[in-house]
Length: 162
Image (cartoon, rainbow, N blue to C red):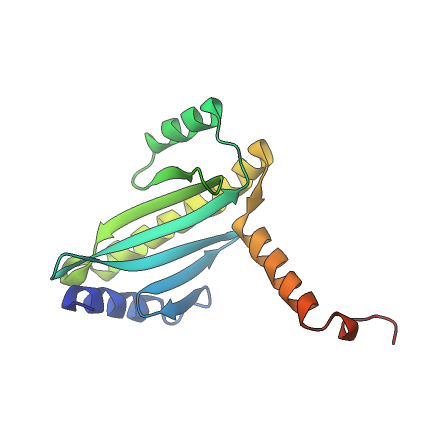
């Protein structure tokens, strides 16, 4: 990791370390939970001495993005302070993302404001999008995957017959 990446990672860890909603995944990837939304915080190198902080929330998966939905997302983008709705057409997923410059110029207030806004927007719009267009929220997908892993371990031990 370059010095800017290290400075960014340290600031994230110092800022979020006491939050029960925060988890460190690895040296450059963190997650925060806000309501039903998860925000991935990724420290990304930019050249030799710089870093970016990319925040991405997967809002709804399994949605067919048609013209009406795409237009609605573009219109919403024009009203946001920062960040933008995006789509991953291969996964039929609607995202909310925002990227800022990391490194020594990033301060705690800027980091906190960015994470708060991304998390609050993601938490609000995952429910609205799912209600109107279908699909599954990230929290629902994670719970479903966790239950599948539990049942795959030893389904015979998971019994109510005792």
